[in-house]
Image 1: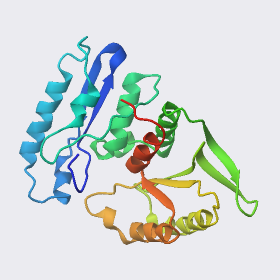
Image 2: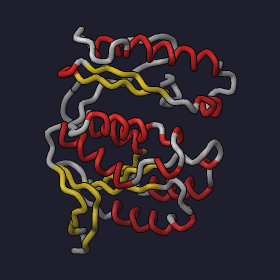
Image 3: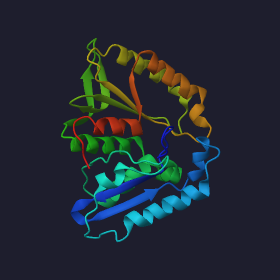
Length: 240
């Protein structure tokens, strides 16, 4: 990612047990220009290609790859976030899902991740932290009303929103409902996680700004999917 105003450029995968390491990066680098219209796209593309070759090498080499040391420092405006651990059943499937989560627009609409995919990914991250999690759980509200959450953990009741490719005018009233729920959540457990990438222009849509303003007015805990992943991963312990 680029330091300061952050944007994801690539993701590094590492599985020590089989010596697997791979760096995959977005092919949609023109989106960088929405952050910096003076960015040298050909240079960034060449640099990412070189980094991918350097990291991958022999994908299943027996040499020890210290991901913590590798990602600790990097050059200029580029940096890695702290490595995170995830529980998986199928390595190939999991790495593909993670890449799709962070780089949704590298895929056509039919191939992009869904809200269900996000739910499964967050569940795995929570389990990796040693937390318990229940899916599609109903919780009793302050007025004995029944509120359905997508994930219920030891620390949070999580509601997921997928605003991509949706009519956001229809989502405004739903945002008001969840603002009310958050305002009356005396324990402060409600966490709202949303996906909204839009395209180069639509992330500034008035409807999305309105939704965020409604939720921020009541100090709701509202995060993008990337921010939600980071928060859930740093909750208990450092991982690599």
